[in-house]
Image (tube, rainbow, N blue to C red; front, side, top):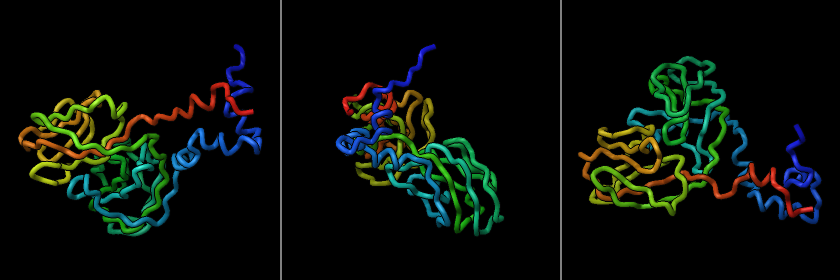
Length: 226
C-alpha cells in the first residue's frame, strides 16, 4: 500500500516552518483553537454548582471553548469524601457513586455531590466544537433547530425566554422528554426537547456545532504554502 501522507501537505509545511509563511499557516488552522483543544490539566480546582445541572450537583464549570469530551484522570485533594484517585465515567453518565467523576450532559465536569470535594485535580480532553447562542420558539415542548446553525453536537445551556427566565437542566439526548424543568437533544440532535407540560414558548440555547474549520482535512490536503 502506498504512503498516504503527502510531502506537500499542510502538516509537512508546518514541520518545515518556513518563516515567510508560518504566520499564515497558523492562522489557517486557527492555532489558538488547536492549543485550546489539547488535553488539559487542572490543578487544585474548587468545585461549584453548575446552573444548568441538577440541583444537587457539584461541578467544575468550564469555558465555552473548552467543554469536556472525556475525563482521563482525577484526584480529590480535600473534602468530605475520602482523598483518593477518582474513577472516570463515560460522558453524560450519572455520577451516583462516591469517588466518581464524569463529563456532564452539557460538557462540564461533575462529581458525586455527597463527596463535597473542595479541591481536585482533573486531566481531560476538551470538545472540538464551535459555540453559538440562539433564541428559538418552542412548539409543544419541541425546538426545531434551523439549518443555518450548522450540525449540532452539544447542548451547553438552555434557558426559558418567555414569561420565565428559568434555567433548564441539560440532560442526555433522548427520544422524548417528560421531566419538568429540563432540556435535551432528541436522538438525531436536530431538535431540543422540553417537557411540554412546562408550556414554554421560547428558549435561549447555547449550542456546540461542528467546527467550520476541518483541521484534520487541512493537515492532510495539499497545501498552498511552501
